[in-house]
Image (tube, rainbow, N blue to C red):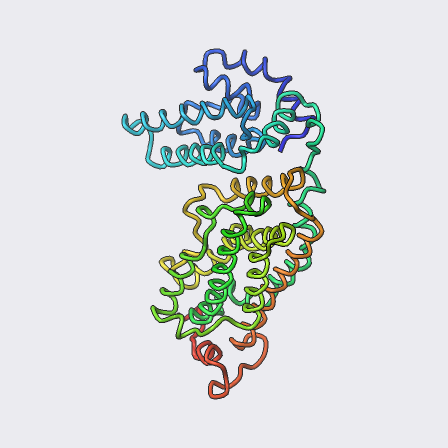
Length: 390
């Protein structure tokens, strides 16, 4: 995101960029003048890979409404769609070229229309950064720094995050040492977590500004995706076969349900920490897990949980999500940064405890109990073949 210094560069280069592209169409001249990072890019050439690289390196602040750059990008999206349609109908580019530019254009379109970006405070702050290089208006302190909420959540949970991802079950999952049935036990617990989390977010969003700001149900909802994966990996009767949630999962669900039912805004706002922990994890490390699972289970293996069809670019969406988090610190929402960091650490701890329970259930960290003395889930997992042979 642009700093005041880089914003001055935008102003400095505006007249130079306009002169350099005076022969280009009006909407393209505006785009280039608003963002010097695109200067010299042959935007009209659909076959140029440089177009995609330059667009994806565009400063995030350019997407905020009310700025000159935003207006130019909105016009460029419309022009880009027209070019893709025209080029496709004329057969002047390859299918890959069409798809590449079209994906970039639609990513920009999604960003420009994101509800979280319509906040008046975001517009004012972005306008100050992009167009004048002056500090944001009084009452709009900079939040995009090491003290921003997203940065504090990341740094404040680093140890808990590392602890969770280093549990043997996770490492075995990445190495293909977890069978489909053992993987289904994780999906079962995640299904319980997301049913509780998404019900709590839906309910709290109506009365809690903080939850409403980071709630993107159509883009992030995982309940249905997990149900599809469970049916594929454990069969139609997975609820009976896999049994109830594990004890640590039940405690995790109870905490989420408690927050969702709270009438105190400060309590309900703690759901933000659980949403942050789960959804950004799914969009980040979750994608690495998905690649490993496809490699071990087969390219056609059901991986609905890790697919976000309503999100054109996970990296771009994460920027939008983090900005929404950061804006909570300058809004009227009842948020306590320290309390959110503590709750996010608790969320990581719940996840780590689920993984450690699966270690024991699957015999990954200690000898597994004999099937005759084990709970149904232990017997199910113990009888499963290694993932590499599944």
